[in-house]
Image (cartoon, rainbow, N blue to C red; front, top):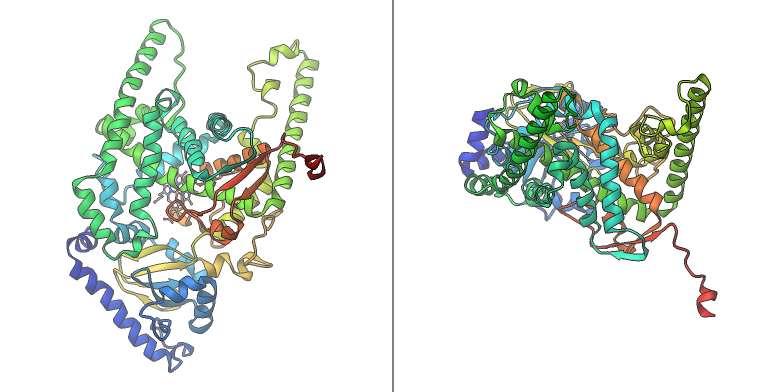
Length: 551
Ligand code: HEM
């Protein structure tokens, strides 16, 4: 694999050759197609979708109507075909065969991202250990420390999300917010910084700015729009080999984390000296310090380097989708009230259950009075908290979030490179070094996989089905699937549902400043933002009726 990567980075002519080879194959296939070769089951060559007269690639046709383009390609050529888009010759795999990309270790997502963007040299330069791009250390850190501890982290996530939304958006009487992303990025950055590094580190604005800025730096490297430039990966490798903005971010993290860790150690020593139990900070940085032997970090800078990679993979994606969620609430205002009602019902249900439990404990004599529940698990002050358990019960919100992902995920996504020659289950062969892509449209917009109206946004589509938004499977691939499926999806979905719950509980109306951008808003991303702002109206705001106004 190193050979493959270094060949890519070393010279453009090799790149050009690599592209030229599949194009050659593609042209040959296109010619054969006219003779209806694909209808012959004995023929295992991969057909190329013919390029429209006057075009040189499929880009224009694909961009005009990706759904129509891909439906037609599958109809005409079957589940595997070649398209030429985004400067790539992509072997497109459709339908149930998509799982073969994710279940075969010889297809590599990391290699593909690196070939397209040069992201590995960008990220690896901040690490001193685990520099092997196949290292699973970040995956393991998330899997072992974050996902199992979500109930523990949730109160602090909610506290930060609530604080920022109340401070920065607050009470609104039709307030126009030109760039809601500014608020969303602070919400997510504060929440993630508190979980990853603890409140003592997260209280420093420089750390929050790093969490935010890193998402932009990362976005420039991996952004889909930037990938259209054929020199993008090469330019990143050249540029970031010399001056990588991540080094500045590492400096910020180590400068703040160093003294914070010293202070934690001092407090621990003091507690031991006094024979008290040390109240160990509950954050990922502390867990990494406590398990340094297991993870083998070389020094604090190396540990912060790993935290930075964690920030790169988590903050950008979660901020992006949370911002998008606000636009969905604006684009489909009819769902705001049902989502709010569900939240009210869930919290009322939980309050009743907790009240009953308190009653039982009072009756049994375990507790003498209601006051004794203060600061216990059953403290009445926390009955209506947006706990992990409460968010889990919000099944409408879960379905809403899953439907957003289904709708917004790019129609061709998650490119992988073949590290070895691979034969697909239909006998078609992929050569080493060729790039494959998942035809997401064939799954996410298919009647077979999604049921009724697969091209419509129907937010209750998954109600009553065993299809939670965290469930990575062939019919839902925004987080990939298999061994490499995103381990952070449990945190991401928890945060997204919480952002949704906070917004609908505070605002009865969210509108698009310019509704003509609705279609664009639904697919908007950090790197390709919606040009329309949003208008927020608080629940407590009672608009003056028009005849009152006249009076
Ligand atoms: C909306 C939010 C997110 C989306 C859409 C997303 C999506 C993805 C995707 C598509 C992959 C590649 C899967 C594959 O190779 O098959 C991935 C990998 C990964 N994600 Fe996420 N992710 C999100 C949030 C997060 C968060 C919050 C974390 C950490 C807390 C995280 C940590 C990771 C890690 C460590 C990997 C690498 C997994 C591996 O290669 O084994 N992600 N993510």
